Image (tube, rainbow, N blue to C red; front, side, top):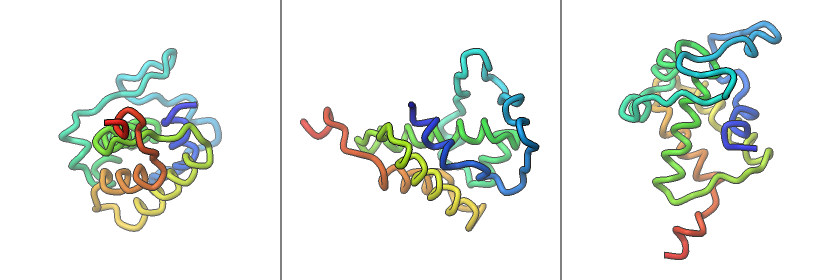
Length: 133
């Protein structure tokens, strides 16, 4: 299981303006993503790091999968900058996703990176290679 799977598990329906019918999400892929490979789209770092929750939703094309790609990208940036490894654990993914979802709904104008960074710090474990230095 990867970070994306864990975060998505906890982030279900993070975008307040979207209600997709059952099964509809399976047929939607963000621009630039191959459904065959399941690879995530990468957004310009300067754009996602400075995006509010609302801005990130618009940047994603109002697509949950693409929004999750942004969250995943931000989580990777945060973990790397902080020398943390995100655990491969469903409970940690739910905790992280629930925190992001709750905080994002509180204020759509706050920076998404700040929310994701806090979530990463909540569940991340010190990277052994960084800790050894």
